[in-house]
Amino acid sequence: MGRAPESAPAVGAAPSSSSSFSVPPRAPVYLRLEPAREPMASSEEDGAGNGSVEEKESGKKAHRRRGAVTTAWLIFYNIAMTAGWLVLAIAMARFYLENGTHKGIYKSIQKTLKFFQTFALLEIVHCAVVHTSVLVTGVQVSSRIFMVWFITHSIKQIQNEESVILFLVVWTVTEITRYSFYTFNMLNHLPYFIKWARYNFFIILYPVGVVGELLTIYAALPYVKRSGMFSVRLPNKYNVSFDYYYFLLIVMASYVPMFPQLYFHMLRQRRKVLHGEVIVEKDD
Ligand SMILES: CCCCCCCCCCCCC/C=C/C(=O)SCCNC(=O)CCNC(=O)[C@H](O)C(C)(C)COP(=O)(O)OP(=O)(O)OC[C@H]1O[C@@H](n2cnc3c(N)ncnc32)[C@H](O)[C@@H]1OP(=O)(O)O
Image (cartoon, rainbow, N blue to C red; front, side, top):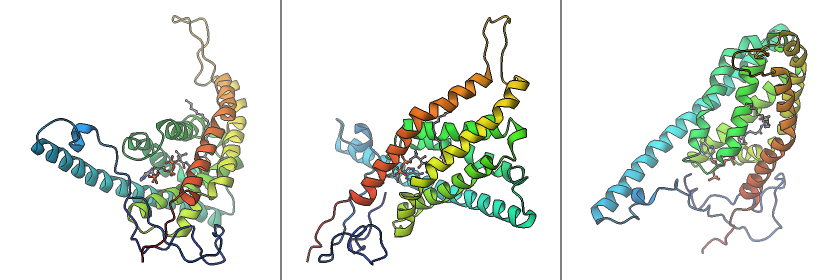
């Protein structure tokens, strides 16, 4: 992440009264953001390993080149994802305003949703160059992919459930906030509201989104039980059985231990970003 200009107003410092993160009144303090932690490079890449000065220099140049290419890709990716979820938001709002009902919204936006939510699988790869957990990102992305492809795409009878619209709206607000945060943060021009939204909206949106997803899976259960979809019955030549109905019950149960891990991860990120930055007196 880039470094904010040193004259940048302190984030979380004594601000206007409207801010919800005011610090005790005192002389204005300014914030010098910690220099962005460059993606960790292996020793041979950053020239810290053994080798001649030329090898070390080429290693550092390779790292900078990789850094520049990686940064350019992430900025493109974040802008594209922000735009994609904005298109989804506008399409859903337009459908509802034109038709006065939520029934049919999913069908009208499903291609865009499938494309951008599947594209987000790249975030597991991005974990190699951004400071985030592969496990947390993997669980988050896999739960989304599961909902999009193995529930709403595969079980058409539930596509008009209110719970589908609930989680779609929550996902959309969340992702527009999240990807615009990443974009502005990487461009070193992060509006405080975007930062505030990134680390506060989830407090409500995360549990609401989970409720929407669980209600949708629950609504799908009767159709799965009746159709036996995605299931393998005995006897068969592999002597293996699989029942998608009971698998969905297990998935629903897995939210209980898994969701709190993601939620507490976000709360930790929130404390780090909104309250944990180093506030230093401005050098006169
Ligand atoms: C086979 C069946 C599978 C079924 C699985 C079932 C499991 C069920 C349990 C799971 C339940 C989850 C259900 C989900 C519901 C919803 O999503 S509802 C909608 C609301 N959701 C949210 O609010 C969460 C949104 N998701 C996220 O925020 C992320 O996905 C996250 C992984 C959960 C957290 O993101 P993370 O990146 O870890 O935190 P940040 O603070 O944003 O970033 C950390 C650092 O990484 C940098 N970074 C990350 N991505 C980028 C990027 N694209 N570009 C640039 N930088 C990036 C970020 O800037 C931070 O850097 P530092 O500032 O240096 O720390």
